[in-house]
Image 1: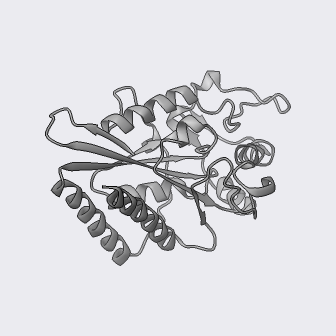
Image 2: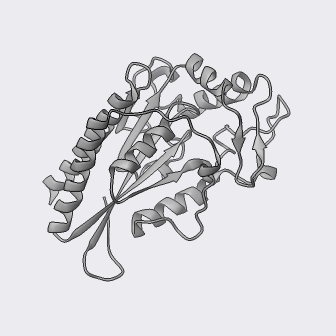
Length: 261
């Protein structure tokens, strides 16, 4: 667990990094934002913010169009790893971090008010408990569609979650999306066949080692690459249930810290 001395020297800082992974349109950013609203001392790091500049996005060798999804070229991995190392040490974004998430429209997916209130109170209590023993806990929530590809990115995470949604649902959701505003302010719209030819094959490539026999649709977690990954069924569970299970997993990680103190 990352622990450091605050700049003012008055207490110790503990940063818990919570990874929320899943395919494009799986609900990961929605989940990340619900978590941010529950945790008083929290912020989000969006993996999309580490995509290369639009003119440097690789062109698919077969289809001749830009490939924003292949794990080898879709993310500037050293830059993302450097940001997470900074976050782990300092408990906030670096000055170099810029996000364009707010430029993209997101469809709200509500969660039951009682559950939100319950966990908001619980995380406030957790933060207060850390304060009583001279520590300050900060929650860094990282969401991304390629979160468990590069070890330098996922290994520092204290809780690793993955939202699995079947191909058809992902495609249906992607088809109704208006487009995607890039960091430069341009609008990217999927060309015909982009999901079938590029998005989904890249998703399979990036996660085949995560699941047994490379079965990203129905396979069990392999535990070979990411041994402590927590799988969330994005279809069987509604968003309220997903938030509940996620918060329970984070609470378990906190209990493990308490047990080691």
